[in-house]
Length: 117
Image (cartoon, rainbow, N blue to C red; front, side, top):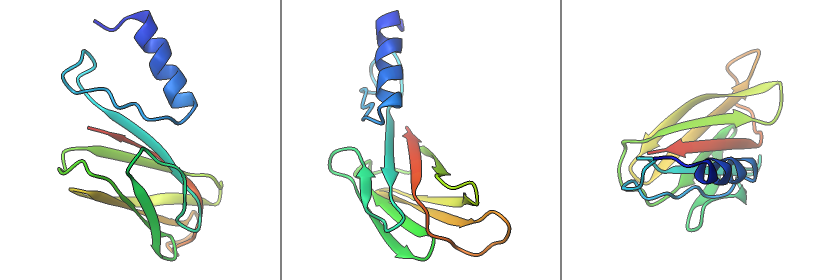
């Protein structure tokens, strides 16, 4: 059963971009992580043990240790003129591709992400 206290705790963690590492055996039944990466590929905030790097213009790899591909990731950019065009997942990383909103050209930008598994 999800209590009011747990809901308030989750809301606080999301608002403050902190790790929501609930064990999958708990009542929520899933684990949520959130993070932020700057346009140079540096971590603004990542869960402990995770890393990020920029590999090309508009291409960023976030490395983790989940060890499986049964998760979902969403990413949003900071600028109104860019968007996350696609996300490719792997067992221990995911790649975020950011492009200009008006064409397909890759473009560097800060982004936030949420990962659920």
